[in-house]
Image 1 (spheres, rainbow, N blue to C red):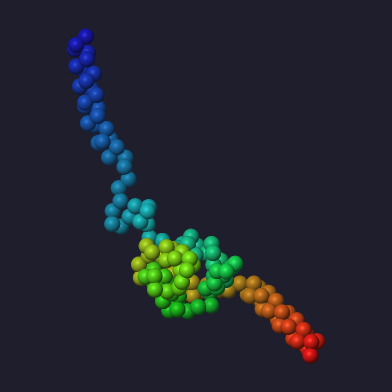
Image 2 (image 1 turned 135 degrees about the vertical axis):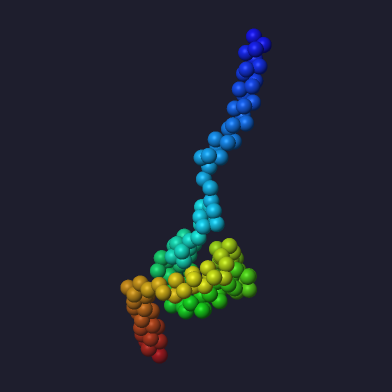
Length: 149
């Protein structure tokens, strides 16, 4: 009986020592050329789609209180993005939200993102519709002003 107990304890000790070796064989290894998934480098397009497009629209047309981006230059956008990151641009919760969105991006990535955004093509139908609505509002104001004279 004692002999069996010694064998079982020995097997448990050897087995527990071998487990880390087997786990190490199957564990994924990352090198400088292939960073772990959390550190994967995203393209400016992927960054825009995952962080910016939800609020500003996938073409940068803006929506529901979020400003239009596709009518700004790369230099202007880079200046604003860097300012949001440093906390020196904008005010209120919008600026804080933007600061959180860009906090982990370096300056080169912000510049690449700004360049990508500046190349987005506006949805002309969307902007034509709002221009038509503005024209109608102006026409109504003029009619009201003319009728009240």
